[in-house]
Image 1 (cartoon, rainbow, N blue to C red):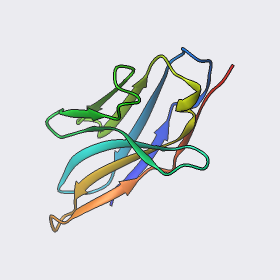
Image 2: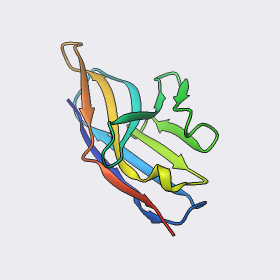
Image 3: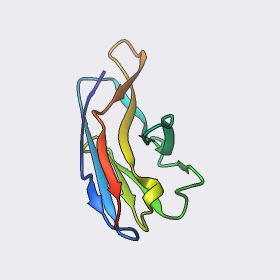
Image 4: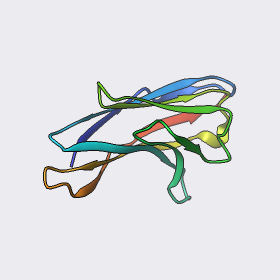
Amino acid sequence: QMQLVESGGGLVQPGGSLRLSCAASGIVSSVEDMNWYRQAPGKQREMVATITRGDNTNYANSVKGRFTISRDNAKNTVYLQMNSLKPEDTAVYYCNVWSRDLNFKSVASWGQGIQVTVSS
C-alpha cells in the first residue's frame, strides 16, 4: 500500500480551472495505473480519468475534452487538470493508485479526498 496526499482543490467559478495533484509514497515493486474518482452528494463514486504506466488515458464522457490526466513517474505523482468547470463537477475527488508490493501482489491505495466546488 502507498500513502497518497492530494492537493489543489477549492472553490472556483463556472468556466474556471483547477489542477489536482496526488503524490504517492511507499516502498513498492512498481506503480501501475493511476486514477481519479469523484463522489457528489447523494451519488455513487464514479471514475473520472485513468492513466496507465504507458500514458494511455481514458475519461468519463462527462469530462472528456475538459479534463486532462497526466503523471510524473519520477515523482510518483498524478495530476488532473480541470478546465471549463461546471457546477456538475462539484464533488469530493479521490486519487487511486495501483501498485505491486514487494511480493508483487497488486494493491490499491486511496487518497483522503479533496473538495472541488464549482459555484458562482
